[in-house]
Picture 1 (tube, rainbow, N blue to C red):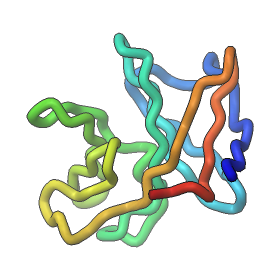
Picture 2 (cartoon, rainbow, N blue to C red):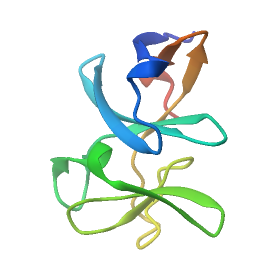
Picture 3 (spheres, one colour):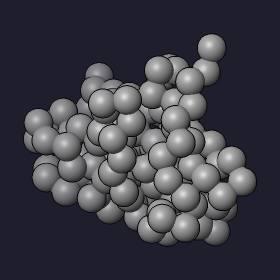
Length: 112
């Protein structure tokens, strides 16, 4: 059973950038990419730097994959899968996210 948590309004998101939200006690990095108007939600925790910083990373695209670059050691994490491009044995949690009219909702209990 999905447990969607209302996080913020769409207008609260920075386009092509990240914000951090506390959802069910977990720090979640939320990214809103234009022009596709696509949202991604991943863990904010960088396992290489041992810090909650991914929401402050740079957004990019590598071979058609949307990625965030950690501001600490510059590792790239796929926003769709959570896999680190430099070390595919490392994967961070990715959370279901949806736009519900003008609101952003995240489900941290349904991480694949």
